[in-house]
Length: 299
Image 1 (cartoon, helix red, strand yellow):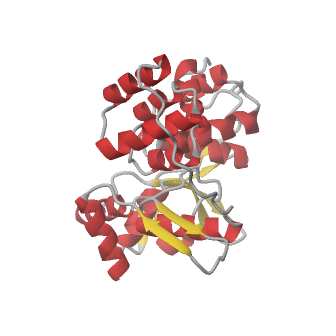
Image 2 (cartoon, rainbow, N blue to C red):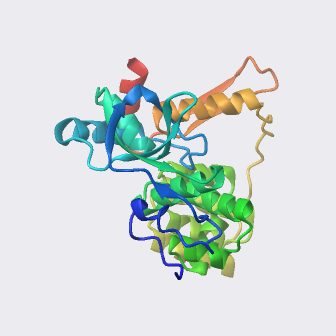
Image 3 (cartoon, helix red, strand yellow):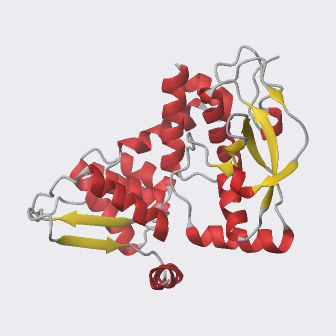
């Protein structure tokens, strides 16, 4: 069987995976029809490629599930030792179903060959549903390539993308941490990120990024700006000398990520030489976003 773009849906991935595919080994099987299980017997996928769950979007999905039910079962594997289920794909739906107050959830049980196959299925399922942000997609691509020892062309065949598409997405990881976070939280789009990559000077790239966010430039306007910067049509402005940032500890990074997941937005914690002093910055990108964050804080 020749390899095809994986557009037939997750139910086809495991049982019909071709033996020569580096991502899916032969011998995987579908374990039956959808069934309902106690929602507290399901635990998250330890290989989940998704890093960020938008709280507002989860609330909207929970309301939809409460009104119409779960449109598509989540995919899990069964652990006979603990008599529980581990998510393979559908953590967003699982979280929203919990938020909606349901005690049971509909699942499809499958048996991945190993952790590599489990992770591949979780990533591809999210890619098909367009649930991942560009940085999560890029990190997922990179992880698949490293763990399976495949190149960009082979990965493109597996996920139904061109080699150039894979390459362009991976290049987003060359952007600075601040720009990557803006991509993760939807402050700028993947198109903005690709346009910024055409600016070779990191300092001028950052200046362009600040202009994009401050002036709400479109992708087309960003592309024009990048061309002008690279051609020298826009002169270099004097740089302001900024104080060196104190490197963040692992505990501080973990706290920052925890707050980002809680609030569903970009959060920055900066400390001074005296760690007892610093600043906590919570970003919002619209008035609705601001109101949502305030409601979470007031709870």
